[in-house]
Image (tube, rainbow, N blue to C red):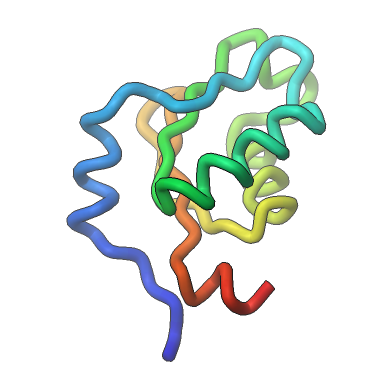
Length: 94
């Protein structure tokens, strides 16, 4: 079975407040650990990238790096806010 995103769950995730903020230091080990913990509980999470949080890299590169380290996929961006997800099937593949 191919792990796929649920458009309805992603639509709902956009309406909730951001669960994580990436701060001016950029991506830290704490951010990665917290993202993994949140994905364990919620599967779909909303992340806000603070304007000073992008540093030298752009927001898409930052989110792709976070997704790679957490075994997640990027669902999309709205401004400086992104939704990422990890389905149960994707978690089982790790």
